[in-house]
Length: 88
Image 1 (cartoon, one colour):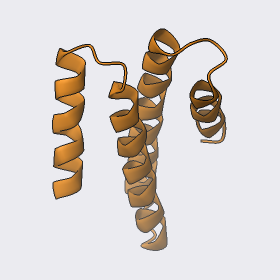
Image 2 (cartoon, one colour):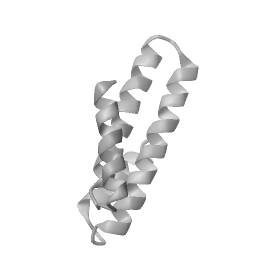
Image 3 (tube, rainbow, N blue to C red):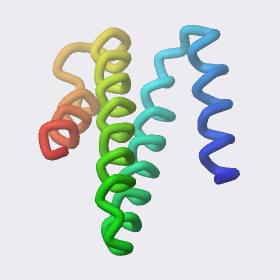
Image 4 (spheres, rainbow, N blue to C red):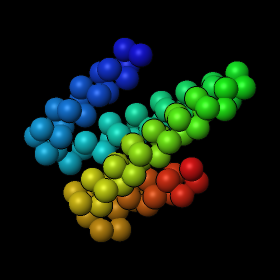
């Protein structure tokens, strides 16, 4: 959980400064949520699994929006994020 706390702090700093790399923190937060969803599934906790997946999708959607607004069109990062989001 310390890692999540640090990621959220970095995201806050990026967002306050309108830094284009804010999407990177969101992608990582999304991946953490997907890992938690996987762990919940292993423990047969469907409710928590769905909650973590929902958070993961929210983070990735935000990441995509920031990337689209801050990276050049046709950027491979935008395509990568879109692919991950499409597969959620």
